[in-house]
Length: 501
Image 1 (cartoon, one colour):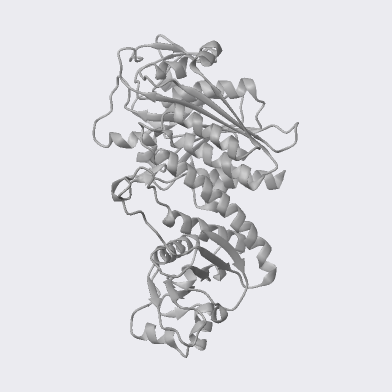
Image 2 (cartoon, rainbow, N blue to C red):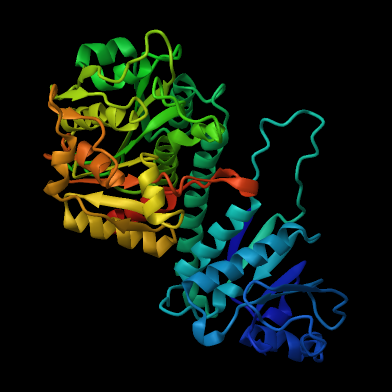
C-alpha cells in the first residue's frame, strides 16, 4: 500500500473514492458539505432516505456521481460531534478501512484526518492513527495456507490522507513515516506470533533475528547457544529448556545509531515459543494459543525493526530469551531448585511459571553486559493480569516513576494502553521459600504483582519496567490471532526518546 499526504478540496479529487465523515443526526462534516454542494445534494438525499444517519461506525458507499471527479463517496458515521474523541476517531477510521477493503477502486482520498478530534490538534497524530487502523484491518496471515486456497486480494493500492492546509503537510508526512514503520513492526510481530509452534521454534526466532540484521545494516545480531548460556551460569533459563528437544537461544539485536557514549534502551521479550506448562501441565482447552507465549519476543522484533526503519538517533538493544516449555523425562520438576545467572537460587513450585525464570537470566545478562539507560521487559506472563485488566490494557510495573509515566503516556498517545500496577515491597514476602532464596510463585493472591516482584529481584540495579501483556498480545474466538501489541507503545516510546535526544 502506498500512502501519501495532500491538501485539497474533496470535490476536486480525481480518485476512486473520497472518504468523508457524517456526524450523528445527519450532520455532514465540512468536507461532506463541500461534496454535497458540488453534487447538487446527493449526500443530503441519501441522508433524507435514511441510508446514513451518522451513527458511529456506520458506512454508506455512493456511486454514479456524474457531477464529481471521483467515482465513489464513502460516508462514515462519526457519532455525536461533541463526543468525537480519540476512541470515536479510531472506530470511524476502522469502519472506513473495512469498507475500503472490499471496494473496487485503486485509490482513495481520506478526509477523516481533517476532522477535529477532542483533545488532539496534531495532524501527524491523526494521519498515524488512521494509517495504523487501515493496516490493522488489511492484515492477513496466509503463509500457512495451501496452494489451492483463494488468498484475499484488494484493488486499493494508494491511500491519500488529506489535511486542511499546506502548512500541515510536514506534520502529516511525519505521521506517515512513523505510522508505516510502526505498522511494519506490528505486522512482523503478528506474523511471528501467528506462526505455529512446529515452525516458530527458538531456532526459527534466531534465524529471523539474523534476517532482520541482513535487511537493516544498522542492526547487529548475536545468538548465544546453550553452551554459551551454561558458561554464563544461566541455570534458570536452561532449567526451563530441559523439557524440550529444541535448544534454547538467547538472541541479542543491537541498533546503535545514537551517540557512542549514550546508554542504550534495552527491550527484553519473553520468547517461549510454545508453553505446555511443563510438568505442571496446562489444561488441553485452548492450549493451541500457547504459541502466542512469545508475544513479548515478537514485540521486541517489531520495535527494533521500526527503530531501524525510522533511523532513530538512539541506541536500542533487543534481548530475547527463547525456549519451549514442555513435559519430558528430563524436564525440570516442582520442588527443583535452580541457580540463576545472578547467583540467586529459585525453588520451582510450578513449572508453568517459566517465563519469569527465562527473563530473570536475561535481566542479569543485560545488567552485566550493558549500562542501560532504561530496561523494559514484556511478557505474556500471568493469567492474573488478564483477570485484573482484561484485554484493554497491559499491566505496567516499574521501579522508576519517570519511566512508568513515559511508557503510560506513549501507550495513551498511540492507543496501545498500559495501566500502572503496584510494586510494593509488601508483596515480596509471598515469594519466601524454606529451601531457596525465593520461590517462583507467590500463591493465589496478586499473581501479576508477585510475578513482577519476582522479576524486580533481578532488576533492582536497573531503571526498569515490566509490561505484562498476557491480556493484549492476542485475541481468542472468531477473531483469533496475534495483535502485535505492545509494538505501538514501544515505538512511540522510542520516538519520544529520540525527540528528547
